[in-house]
Image 1 (cartoon, rainbow, N blue to C red):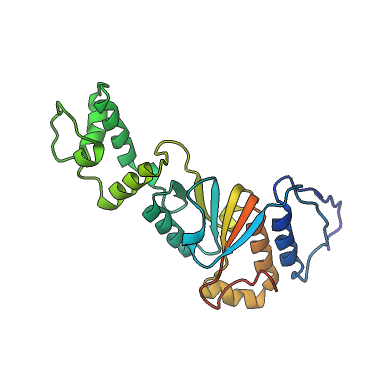
Image 2 (image 1 turned 180 degrees about the vertical axis):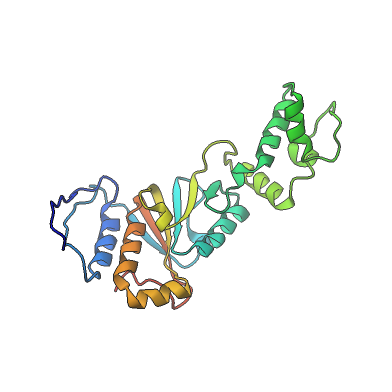
Length: 237
């Protein structure tokens, strides 16, 4: 209601048609808002609901995995860890582990590269035998002090053909943390924490705005997880 000049950005260069339809179904539920009309990208895109995260095709492509509350990110992280998917998140980014540097240095040594003292220190942090071997074995046999869960994750990731050096193709975030972000594929959890669910009863408009941000992060495909409890945001009211 404040006076001033209003400029409407009436064309999205990100959001495809089907994701826009879902976004509009959300904002129509907002009571206190300025009406705006905007056009999507001229592609259909896809919107798919899933009963379980195992059916989401995370094995290829660029992804943004979103949850409303921070503690829910653990489920998404654990799924990527157990599956060997390359990912990063605010709370857990395994490819930033110092063990990765030791692995890469060890494999360079196996290929014939000479390492300096500092490089050997990085390697020796993760192995019991500190001697320089004549016939070095593969890293997951030699670096026996890497934690078992990290070792199994790195092995699974390499078997999938995932990179251990480039930027991960999957980003895990809260919806708030992803504002301004985008990806070809977005997975959105619809469950809410009890506190957030209770707050929604007092300020429903706010929760609509949050999930509007979530569904408009996709450039192509939007995937949604069906809620596992009765505490969830109802996208189709």
